[in-house]
Length: 319
Image (tube, rainbow, N blue to C red; front, side, top):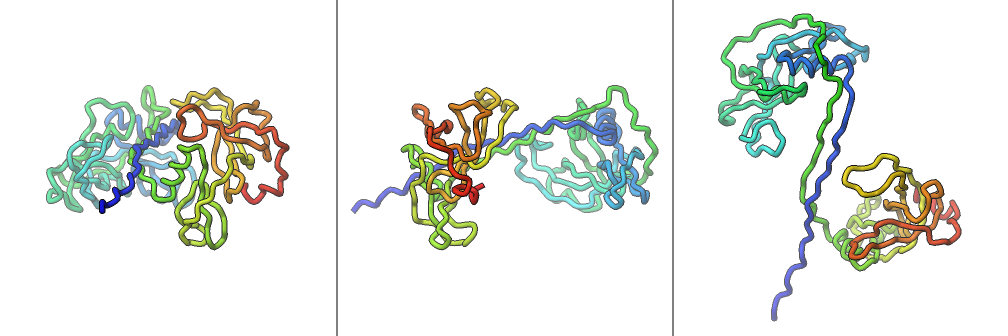
């Protein structure tokens, strides 16, 4: 006999990006502008402690704090962890230590990278100093990293007015996660069914709720779900939102509607875009069906079926 070949393991690279743009208040603006100018600023709390990085509200009293001070660019490692496999966009591309450094004149520690030849060269209590980036723009990356320093501890926080020419008033935080996703048994069956233009969920043997997409186990009862159930294709809009901001790399004109859709026979709603109807005519209870594009492996959007709207009592438990 010839042994059956193992089933193909599905894998797909996924990237989650969220470039977050935010404005800065006077404290954070002064801190980042100070880094651009080669100065480290902190803020003094109501009980006299110096916090670096600075915060805008006292963590004890919740009062707004604005008293800026400048601390030294030298400090002491309070704790550390070795990173032997740097990831893209991290401060250094060679192995380094993540360190918490209490700068001279500060009462709290700043997290950053320490350039060291190996973990044996790092210890709690070691002295370090800031290594400034060659080009500084007003960001935490203006501190390229910390490096070992043989000088003694010392220095006190000095008052600073926080005034700089051409102050930094906003930043963009480039949050990004790259990973390889491999679905389990339940979601593999779900994906394979979608390629056949079918939607398959799994029923909990205890509470009998049908999960779409299936999860492999019921999160309520904690038991495995192995009974596969085909649902839909039509469903009911339970809730929705109107999207007015165009997403990057998404070729859909705004405004459009994104909805929760309870497919017939499913025990909870899934997400889907609504098309084929003006956005201001989408409503709760609207009956919809999937629209597939040529070669598509999942519905492109859902459109009205022309049926009467579903009664609220028929889907209220799925909102």
